[in-house]
Image (spheres, rainbow, N blue to C red):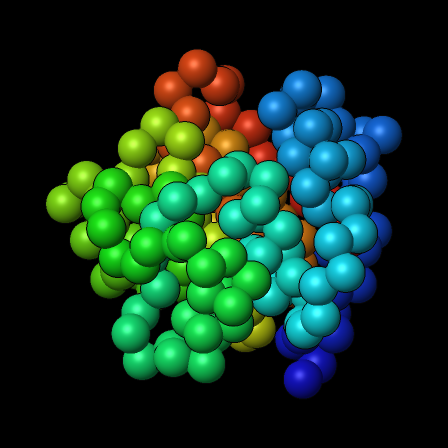
Length: 167
């Protein structure tokens, strides 16, 4: 619990809002997606993911079958969405899982505009270390740390950048 609190404090002191973002892609992501009120209920992480589905016009999302409750919530909000077709537009990770991350890269389950959504990136020291290693991967060009969750992008046209955004 103390680790989580101290992580939040460090995050809050180093994070910015849309005014500190110099990337047009991330600025639009923050202002037109994260800061937009879609009237979505749920945890901050759930709201971020559901907003991202709408903003990126995702057609297929990779969510593990055992997460039935969350899959149903996504399907209720976006009835035409398909699950687990590759390459995926959005890949959902319940926590920073290095085995799953390396499988995504190894098997090419992503495309240039795929977003990897990861919950609980600061839950404990191990999840934070995994998040940091994901950010450092050569194929990841953009990472956005939202504290409660994080997102990774593989955009080849984008310079490698890391952002911490308060939402």
